[in-house]
Length: 328
Picture (cartoon, rainbow, N blue to C red):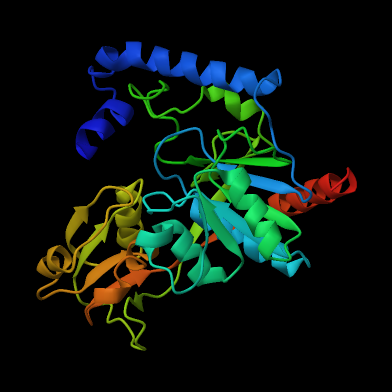
């Protein structure tokens, strides 16, 4: 299924025209919903602290999580006390849930679990982001909120919007779901504050985000160095698995086999153990967070850190200061 969708969305497959009428219906319904917020028939909730939304206009991963982590570190380094809200995709959450280091990805979602493990900032997950934000403010002393995803969640008023684009796949065939990957038309990018490309930018108005890999780390947390001359089984259950495989190749890792999984897929001990009977298994940090409880001694992950130009950081901090001075 994942392969078929990839062909339709990114390889100009003819099946897109079969799905095109459904895309028109999706556009109509989403446009009506957005208009209801614009004219005030649906209420937007304004919070007492600035809100930064990190999202995209395409379905699937584009690099939002590394950007959220970058923002957290940037804000902390400049004296802010950030908190994060997220939907907690794939988790079984009734209402909202405050994330702790003890929570599993099944309880709060793989990306929130990863963000919490990396940054340890206050975080609340739930499908209703306004409710999640209110609980975050009630329980923690935060002075700015980052919404992990939620560009189309118009019930939450936002001060700054950051749209992330996959630099390799861009906007695919340019059609809306389900014929294409778009959640909103490409014109939506004109209204966001920042368009950040995960990869090489194409326009002067875009900012480049490069993901810098670190040395491999054992999933089970043990201290050990990876021997670079050995071949690996590469696996990825992210929005664009090929990006991870390309990264390993650029770093001259010897890939014996590469295995793609669906984004947010829940892994089992048995299926992953079969992949790594002899060779080391190399995965993303997002995948690793889901394998901590049953990882083997030859399972590794490759941490990455988002790097952005200082011009982006400076402009963002200026916009935050402006938002704060306007009544937050």
